[in-house]
Amino acid sequence: MNPLRSILEGPVLDAAPALLGWRLRSRIDNVVTEIVVTEVEAYDGANDPASHAFRGRSPRNLTMFGEPGGLYVYRSYGIHWCMNVVTGPKGRAAAVLLRAGVPTVGHVAMVKRRGRQDHLTDGPGKLCQALGVTGVHDGARLLGRGVLSLKPGLAPTTVEQTGRIGISKAVDRTWRFVTSDVV
DNA sequence: ACGAGGATGCTCT
DNA sequence: GAGCATCCTCGTC
Image (cartoon, rainbow, N blue to C red; front, side, top):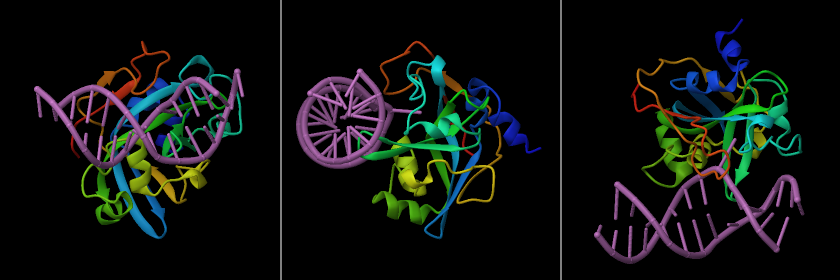
């Protein structure tokens, strides 16, 4: 079995830090772009007041209730897209928000999509824009041969753990994981 | 480096 | 109708 799959099927608080160092590749509009994940946050479904799934299933959050390894994409502040990796166990609606990464492939395409030369992938909305991810990719499978795929990478040597960014609920939970290690 | 303010649209009450 | 899992620009220090 795919070793990545077993990690994504596990608890979100294990999967979130494990995702640091992994590569996320997109092939969208026939352009390949790829980043190494450097910042994530865990959201734990019905057990987490800050989760979009806290109050149960809805049209928007349906993907989180599906298989681990799926991609949950939502619109943020009416303007940006943000993406999460669904984790296990199935039905718990736990997910890892991908907040930032380091560009490794397709730098020119990212500059074009972002409309600027710097700060290409240092925020959740920027990450989606640079990789070309939008609402049509909600529900995409990340462990197959689709337009989006996760691949293993080098585990970072140092990981910082802090509170989550931009939320007002459950602020005491230190479920944000960041690394500054460069691959 | 850092903070304030505005843009913008969907979700759920 | 309120409230956002955000980003950009422009002001200050």
